[in-house]
Amino acid sequence: MTLKIYQEVDSDEAINSLHHNLCNLVAWSKEWQMLFNIDKCKVMHLGFNNSHAPYFMDWLQLQTVSEEKDLGVIFSDDLKWEKQCSAAVLKANRILGMIKRNFTDGSPDTIMALYKSLVRPHLEYCCQIWNPHFSKDIKLIEGVQRRATKLIQGIGQLHYDDRLKRC
Image (cartoon, rainbow, N blue to C red; front, side, top):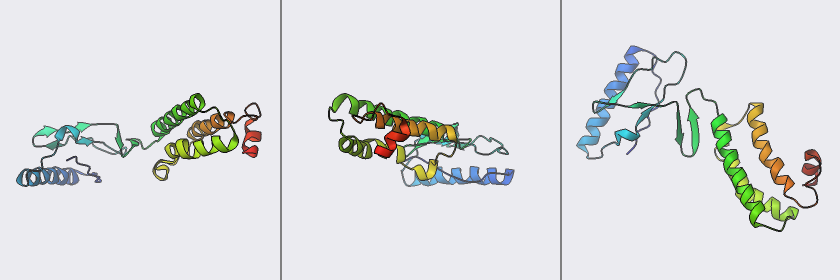
């Protein structure tokens, strides 16, 4: 069983309360024989005014991390999404490479169907959370679409805007 606790800790009282809650959780898990894997329990400190207090479970200090992957989304302590964007683009580009190597039919219908079913889900997964709003992240993601339009036979050499109009 892994543990994820999201609590605003902005005072010594709140830190002590969280320590107390962690002790209660460990006691409960022992009583019900559902022990936590403390190696998988981590602490991420968010915000500039955070005291970066150490936290313990069963007398073992929890590991402090600056980023964590949860349900396929990379969260960082500064709440910037550039690593998530890079990871999504990397997966999408790998799939585009696989499409380029393995499919000889470069008709618009085939490429668009492959793009929509295999590539776009990786770019759109949980985008409500990590919605890219920096222009560098948007350009990075749009580069995947730019590359995909080059795979279409007959329009690969055209300017990007013209390729989009034809699609």
